[in-house]
Image (tube, rainbow over all chains, first blue to last red; front, side, top):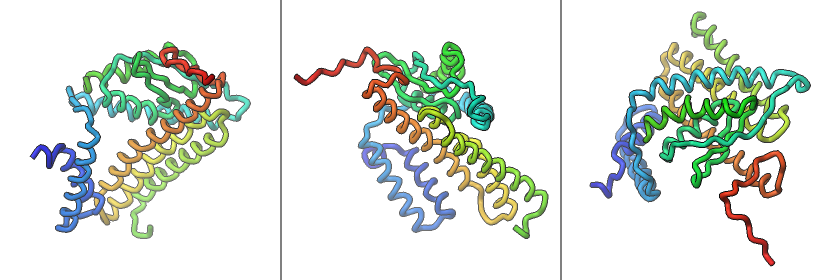
Length: 163
Length: 121
């Protein structure tokens, strides 16, 4: 059973995804979707991913809400910056290196997606030997403040979920 | 859009205009900003709030007309949110790698923890 279906929840999710994309349940759709889900899970198993331990899922909705607020806020900030005439743009783009305490690969992936999806910040690099990440910020005013924002606003809460 | 009632047509139109305006501003930024690393930030406008409001408009439109269920838009949102950051990260990392090799002063140098490259005699 374990060899045939290494990730049962993922297989069900893939099947549901297929049915949703097809806009309806039919025998052929379920069969094809089921076959695709099994094949997808076999690929995942071949990748030998480390197991994810999700703790405290209850804080995820609040986290998603804060991500949405932050995305909307920085959309506004970046749009204003772009619409300013080039001579009046005083922004200072720059890199900042941020030491992280999180080691869970899934937590780091989530942090990378949050930071990159937010306009104005792009996750550039992660050095696993000393656990620092490189962030590019469109308007870098205060390095220390960005370190604090990333660590307090996102990393601490992601660690509660993923570690 | 003849059969769409006015109370639904107004928010749908506003959301579409707002979303496309953000996508347009993002594209202007992509052309206008100075360095590559600054340009990378601009398209995220269109792929976050921009696509969000266009999808909301689509949900509203098709829900009011009752032609189909709104879950397709949710799927699109999930796929876009997951795939755009990966693309941007790949582009930025490729640029950083090249700039570091060329010893550009605009990017931080390779970390000291990396072993220095040996010169071929």
